[in-house]
Length: 104
Image (tube, helix red, strand yellow):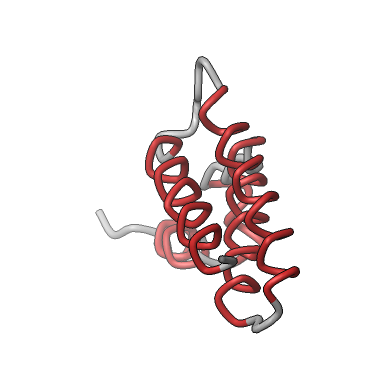
């Protein structure tokens, strides 16, 4: 028994259009909002970029302080839910150490 054209078109359209932004929210789950550790990490990496490019030692010292505070914030989190939490914590700690050494 042949499949009706409308049913065939629908069976092909849904998987093809699921990548489209219009139908993607109906079929695929949305990505979760970034957690607090993700926000701290992104801000710290922006600071680290500034530390690596600036030549002013006072600015580097201020950035090193912010990075150390961000590392302490991430390390103080007792029950992280982000699977990348420990990776982010290690990177921010290393960035704080680098920036502190560069500020001297």
